[in-house]
Length: 415
Image 1 (cartoon, rainbow, N blue to C red):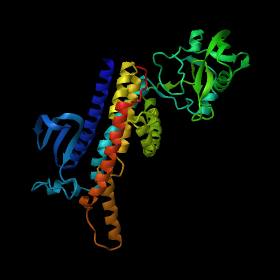
Image 2 (cartoon, rainbow, N blue to C red):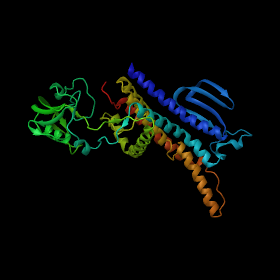
Image 3 (cartoon, rainbow, N blue to C red):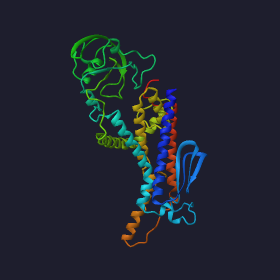
């Protein structure tokens, strides 16, 4: 029941975000004097609406987005009534049209920033000094956290019914213990421990550790698992030993901030998120084969894109496991991604309209400088083939991600 509640809550949060996106367009358009005739949440048949002034507000039957109708977005639009010619959007200065078209993404960024500020104050943001790459992790002290199980096969997944228990747990080792030797072989770092444990035969082994400054010894029955070589994660797996522990880093994973310091921390985190989002968008084309592989029965790559369906399912898992921080960070990431994606200079995205507006402005300026007649506005009808191509590619990609999220979803928690 909690899983379904989480799915519904996350889907509702996305719907509210999209509704605020359209509200951003509407509010800025009205502020500049443009005519807005309709603002609706959802698509399809109208369930409820009312009119205030010249704008109709309402709710549609299919809760998959929303829309805001601004009169005369392009010179080719025929929705301008007599007497409203001066209020057609395309007649306004390019800077005003830019603000209106970018206001939707601005709302997503505002939602993400406000949520991040609250997270920074209440739960903390990820520590930028936390070790992330393999070299940094291997250099950490061999302080352990008990894993709930041992996954025998060479896959990255959560524990499932039937997986053997952690040998370290069975031997009564504890979170925070620092391993100092295995079968007499000294260990100082996490990398040392991985090397020594894997080089030890499965079965009985003596583990020496420090707990609260006192030395202890435990007899551990090392499990036999399949793992790829440490220096070649994509190499051929072989049988090695496993202790059934995770690294407990010496630096905290998150840092809580005061109300004032949280502003700077939020800005820094947002900058890092922008870089990661740009890299993720660059990798999208090369992830398409991985999506198809997941649909046709292969293992789902954790780094493949997800749809709103997949994000909602992850939101459901987060609520089911009382991991509300994961829920809200997913919400932040999705809003930020939508905000950036919507600014891409491609029609029918808002960024496409912005790019055309500035192209017109620059072209008019250049023609004036060289003494040629201003060619006027871009004919959107001539761009329709390109627009349809973008819609087709986007539709196919969306279908792939939705299908993968239904038949082979990414999971963060065992269920």
